[in-house]
Length: 168
Image (cartoon, rainbow, N blue to C red; front, side, top):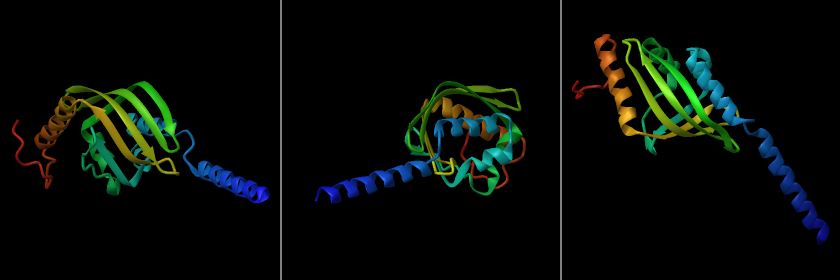
């Protein structure tokens, strides 16, 4: 009986080791590297950092950010630049990271915004971001979103974007 229990325990630990081996190594550093792609406006690198099933949450609410098709960063870089000032970057577990940072968003019209955020980030085994769950001020978030929408309208880039109902 003891030999069977030892065998089961050995197999179980071996299985857990294989699972850990498959996980993204240092997910916190991989996420930070993806953000560095965004800072230098490397579209290919930034797009490669996101899984096709990506979900972004702000204070637990889905922002419906569509990263499919690879157009998100190409469009974003046309009218904004990003800088990140990190306070904390650490691994929370397998395929999970936590970043506390101030994000500076600089628009082409000269307006700048600071957002103080804490993000819990999930990545897949290939180290692509699958979920970005950020916590921060709604006022800071909306200030950036409305400024970008206004800029898109002013630049004539709104096309078929569903942005009716915004008063500026």
